[in-house]
Length: 331
Image (cartoon, rainbow, N blue to C red; front, side, top):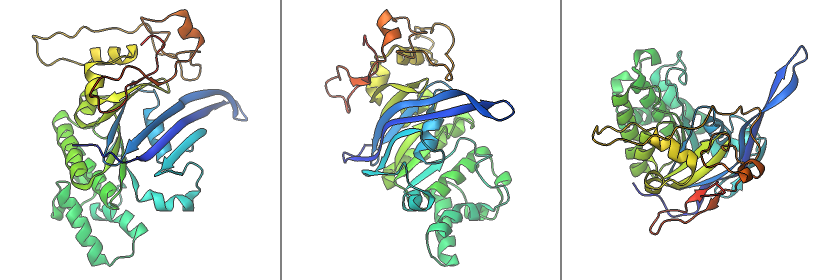
C-alpha cells in the first residue's frame, strides 16, 4: 500500500460549517453549533487519510461537506485544483462520478425497494449510455469483485447480512470507477470479524484501482490498519496530522496522547498508561476561546485560554513520510 506522490486530488482549505439552532414559534436562530471550524487538509491519488476523534467532533460533517451533501459555511474545496464548493447541482455532475461514498449504516444507505443489481446499476444508468446486457455484465463483475455471488443480484437488501450489505454499498461506489471514496464510519456497525474482511477488501481495491480514501472512524485500530496519514479532530478543529507510523509511535498533541492511551492492549504483559482527560467535552454551541482543548488539557497554560494555536509543522522526524503538524502552543 503506497501513497501516490502526485499533487493533491482533493484540497480542503479553511473549511467551516456552522448550524443554526432554531427555537420558538417563528423558528428564529437562537444559537450556532460550530460543527467544523477552519479545517484544512489534502489527499493525493491513491492515498488514505484517516480522520479520527470523539463522537460529535465534526468528522462526519466534513465527510458530508466534501461530498456536497451539505453546503459549507465558508472555506474552499478543490478537486484537482478546481474549486467545487460553490457549484450548483448540474455543475457538480462531472465531479459526482469521481467522488463517491460508502456510508456508516448499511441498513439505511440502500433502497429497500430496489433489487441489489439495480442498486449497483443505478449510478451507471445515471451517467452512461449502455445496453442492458453491458450493464448487467458490469454489475455481475462488481458483485464478484467485492465478494458477492452473481446469483444474489436479484435479492433485496433485507436478504443480505450486514457485512454483505456493506459490500453491496462498496460495489455501488465502485460502479463509476471513482478516484476518491469518502468512507464515513464504514465498519462501525459491523461485527469485528466482518470489519476485518471489509477493511481488507478496501485495501485490496485501493491497490488494484489506485483509489484514494477519506476514511472517517473513531476506532484507532482500524485507522492504523488502512491509513497512510491520520488527522486527529477535537471539537471542530484538526489538532494533529502525521503519517500513520509517526502518529502512533510519537504523538505530540496532548489530546492525541489521551486517545492513544485509551486503546486496549491485547497483550496482558503490556499495560498501557492511560491518561484521563479532565472533565467533559464542551458544547459545540459554546466552544471555549483560545485552544478548544484547554478546558481538559493537563498541560494548559494561560496562553491556551487566550490564543488559538495554529496547525504548524513541529519537528518532523527524520525519514517521516509527511510533515508532522500540531496545533499546540507547547508541543
